[in-house]
Image (cartoon, rainbow, N blue to C red; front, side):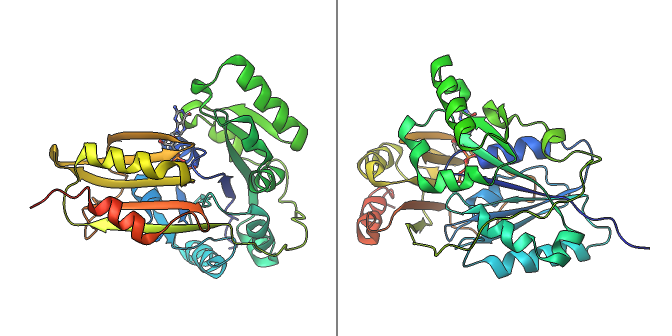
Length: 316
Ligand SMILES: Nc1nc2c(ncn2[C@@H]2O[C@H](COP(=O)(O)OP(=O)(O)OP(=O)(O)O)[C@@H](O)[C@H]2O)c(=O)[nH]1
């Protein structure tokens, strides 16, 4: 008997927009559907995979590159292996990295075999509603929005009514066909992005011609096997932040040994919260401190990052 096709949800959005937060909300509200998650981090250390919880059919991590270009073969191999599972997952959720142009991924998903076996159901673009207005002018963000069926406005809790109205207007101007939802803390209803009984058959999409990729971002990772001093880390990040597009990491603080913290920097806003373990087994074999930095090419120096972060390691 032919197996049922497995619908695919592609989650895109700019660096730090709130994709993982949306993915976790969707997985937590999957109401028993077996969803496999494929998570792509541009950096060498896949912090996102550690943060995903509730993927009932497991998390596949693709790191150190982007599934829209350098890792596109890995994505197709991953989909094929998910489809070979017995039983098959009931849906596959792909979280792209924030530097990905989803048109390139959609093009790969239009392969006739993939389209038949794992039809692309929805492209969901997460947009940071609290980002400054000029963020909507970013060509990558615009490319991501242009592919969206559904747009989730994240961080609306950090904006006022005028700010939200401005983002709604900008999204409607760029992608009038998309359904737009406000989604503070990732609150996107599953039925909107993965309907249980999709009424429309999978339609081939036209992602346009492949455009040459001008590499725009670079990434550096820093690891250590020692706890870090919180005030020193705060000062170091404060110095580096103006040149960073995104940073995130996990580390233990000298001040609170044994309790890993999750550090996030996005849109110039830094947060530090106790690390909540994802759905899988506790991460083992990972460096005690692991931080990934992303910036426009030429704005990061590994020597500078190394020196700044090495200075945060507590003396033994
Ligand atoms: N206040 C607030 N913070 C949010 C919201 N959504 C996400 N965040 C925070 O924004 C930061 C980035 O969120 P992520 O979900 O990791 O963003 P992402 O798009 O997956 O990031 P990358 O994969 O690195 O591009 C985290 O510190 C989140 O806690 C929201 O609706 N409100």
